[in-house]
Image (tube, rainbow, N blue to C red; front, side, top):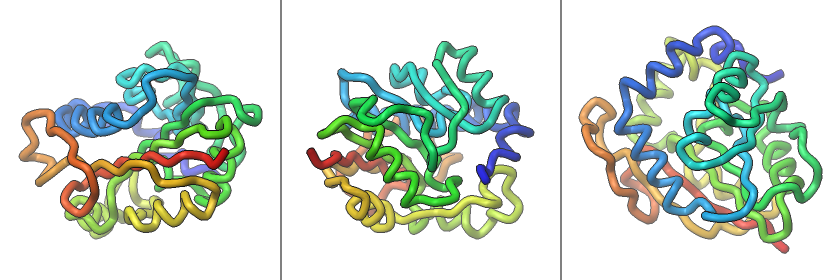
Length: 211
């Protein structure tokens, strides 16, 4: 069962986080933009309110939360109902797929990656953005997750976890970037992403479906 309750009930708070942490969001978007394909048909899985899709030029997306989908539609995204484990798209429909923190909220991470593999064309790419559970922010989220509106039912992953998940489900790791260096409250400019992991709180991995 999709973990939609907080997203159904707290759209205002969700949007406010991006306003309050605008440079964090812009830094995350910049890291994704560094490795996302510049051409081809893309889709965001767990499109939410469409804030990343809008910033990155993605026109298609799916999400199980009605309020989130409506907000994304208001932003011009073709957001349709769907869960990651049973995507509402035909085989080999897209050149690339984006997931930003969505992996934390799925019920079955392996099924999710199998579905993404299915909807991608041969050689298609998946871009995974997430807070590394071993980073300072990740550890802080884990420590306080029971009190969090959004992360109470979330499952956090390390970069190693995501790499294994991708490899086991038919993907080859291509590139890894990191960003969001330091405490969120101290970020007052767009940070430039760096290759690799271990320093940034937010990690972006690009992996390619085997042809």
